[in-house]
Image 1 (cartoon, rainbow, N blue to C red):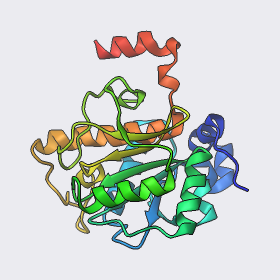
Image 2: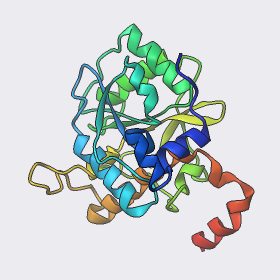
Image 3: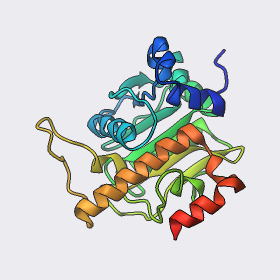
Length: 247
């Protein structure tokens, strides 16, 4: 039976120790998992690898610079504290085995970041993801995260949630015991980080261009750090530092 992720286990897996941890191979590194499904599941694989690269360059987290494809019904899903789910269009219905495994993953402490690559609202990925999430977590609903939520200060201080688009100004989340087990953006966050085979940016963020790309990168980093650290930045001991940085 899969065991629950603990904050200490997640931090140990992500941060480890510079020398000893490497003896354990991938278990000592942050390896983002890319959810495989029946639709176009890999449209932002380049963006996910870029997120890992940015995480390595800008933080102390040690990473593996790849996006590891992961079937949603695989027991290996429980080895990854961060799972990215997206599609450039409708998300096909999940099988009962995928629904059950994903529910167990989220309940045991896993984190899912869902990203509407098509920027849809009420159709396409948006409608189908909401439908499937209702099957996975029938007792929860997606709600908008307030600007004071810890995800907006886990690493960078942010007051918006842009991606390749700026269709919706907020992130939505499904909470399990006050923990945001699922975060969802309709703005195609990793589309702002995606590169084509020649290494050039694949998309121009709209309407904010390169500045919006940087903000989307910071948001993606904050989301990854939330998956690893949860709500530690809400502890009172951090408030003076946070408020000083905000000023």
